[in-house]
Structures are given as structure tokens and as C-alpha cells.
Image (cartoon, each protein chain N blue to C red):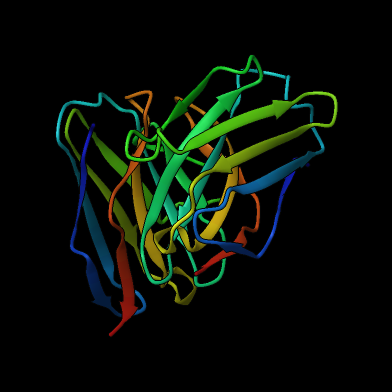
Length: 119
Length: 107
């Protein structure tokens, strides 16, 4: 079955760039009409959608983050990447990647990776 | 942006109860509304998509309804494993938004 797993540095310094990777196994990221999302959750808070990307490379971002976020897709390695810069303490969160279809929601999620921002 | 407002933000109930969570969109979103369940320390789980389509493997005690701007998630006959936080999410706009969540707790 399809599995996603996020990876990246657990700790990032304020003003630096966060780079996370989501490895997809069990399916090719170019199959079907799926998009690949990033969602985050700050400690004790709700879910915040960051953005999603199609295998074509077309991406849509949360307007509140769009000036700081970039997503990319590597079809050769079946991975999706998230870059967020500059980081601030408010970006401390668990970051999830998820597979989705616009009409059918996000049906497969990674376990999440925790990112803390230090000053 | 389409804003999603869930109510209540928290809810206390007992095993066997019927509970309803409401989600309201700031503009019409047709049936592009999904519901997720999240337990502490875990990733969200998709329960219902397209406002009312139950995902495979999700118990039939969960149901969703609504269209336009007003949606509901109903759980009939609460089970111990249902105590969790529930989120709605719209996918009508190309930029998605989640509701703020409803925490379902044991009374």
C-alpha cells in the first residue's frame, strides 16, 4: 500500500531555511491525478494547510505562507520537498505530508516530523 | 480565502451517545468538504470525503451531510475509540482550509 514518510532536521535556527522531504513508497507520484500536500500543526493547535504540488510541478500555497514557501517534486526518486524561509519560532510544528485528490480529500498521510526553531 | 468555522470547539459525551459536529463555510463550497479524525500524536485520518462519502473501513456509525455552506458530521453510538479531535476541510478552492477542530471528550 502507499506509504509516506517525512524527514528533515529536527531543529532549525531562526532566520534559516527549513528543508523537508517526503518519501513516497508503494506507488509512483506521477500516477493518477493526485496532489501531494504539506500540512503542519503547531503545539496544541489545529491543522494548517501549507500547500500542495502536482507531479507536473504546478503548486498551490497557503496565501499566508506563499511568500516564504516553495515545494518541489522529484519524480526520479519519488519524493516531494518543502522549503520554508525564513523560519521563525512560530514555525515550530509537526509537519505532515499527505496524498490527496481534490474531490476526495487527503487519504494517505505520513506520520509527521517535528521541527523546532531555536534562536 | 474560504474560512471554515466548526462548532462546538469541544464536546463532552458518553459511550453510546449520538453527537453532531457542525462546519460552516464562509462561501458556498458545493460538496467539497472532508472530515478527519486525529488522535494525540498521530496523523489525521480521512473519514468522509465529498461531504457524505464514507472512506473504506470507516465504521457506519459515522455519517456526513450538507452542501453549500453548512455541513455536519454525526457519530451514532459513540465508541471508546471515537474520542479524538475532528476537523473539517474544504477543497472547493484551490487553496485549502481546515476548520479549527472539535475535541470530543469523555463525559
